[in-house]
Image (tube, rainbow, N blue to C red; front, side):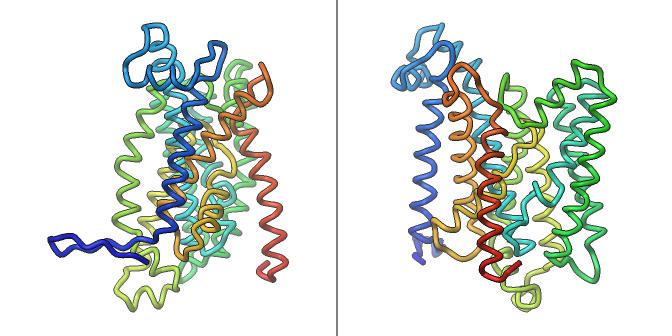
Amino acid sequence: MSVIRTPGGLSVSYRPRALFVGAGCVVLAVVAAVLAIGSGEYPMAPDEVVRTLVGQGDPADAFIVNELRLPRTVTALLVGAGLGLCGAVFQAVVRNPLGSPDILGFTTGASAGALVVIVLAGGSSAFLAGGAVVGALVTGVLIYALAWKGGLHGFRLVLVGVGMTAILTGVNSYLITRADITDASRAVLWMTGTLDGRGWDDVLPLALGMVVLVPLVLLGCARALRMMEMGDDAAAALGVRVERTRLALLGAAVLLVALSAAAAGPVAFVALVAPQVARRLTKSPGPNLLPSLCMGATLLICADLVAQRAFGDHQLPVGVVTGVVGGGYLVWLLATERKAGRI
């Protein structure tokens, strides 16, 4: 642990390895983003992409980059960052590596709210974001109420979340059967997790939400969350209002899940994998919020690059790539936890 002291008497502590990992993720994400922007039917070299981004490209390149490809890339970075951060919050709150919004049911709840908008109203991006937020919040309230018993126990929260996921999966399937063929096709593609056709109107709700929620989590609740990992009694003895802090963290994480799902669909396993990979690379205790945020952005933009380039002319939805990689990681994680006697 290193400390920086300012002339005004303020001090900021940081872990050099965690800072290095976060910086490495940012560099890798920027490189992958440039390569992703240069991909497509009109390929562009990395230097052409960079030149266009700084305003020195010709009008045709500027239109392709700024209007067609940059919104998709920004969406991937923001969604990945949001999922990585909320995954770290969930896993720290429930003190369980399986505590991700995919498994706890929050992603499925956001999907249900968005599907109502797609299937019944055919709404725009703003209505889609609103539907996802409402669906995730209602799901969060139900899970919190059902898991509450003199406090919120992590294992009980996971079990209730798994049951809620199963119920909402059935609800989502029913909603699709109620739609006409066009809306049903759109809904199925969205539920896979896709970044195709993303525009600035898809970016805006998520960007605004992250401007508010990320500082709230990183600056307002990070210290309390580190204390809560020692146990509720120890945190309360150190002055943390445990239930109030837990509720604020869960609320912020649920909103991040909802806005991310509205922007790109329920992209699978990023929230599960990013915090675990970040913790293994930093080798630091605690929730590793900032490294998880950077890792999530890196994983999703790299997955999008693979989805665009790895299969020739046939582009895959990014959720297919994250699902295959994340599913394999989940099997490995379960095997590791069982071998260690934790499950």
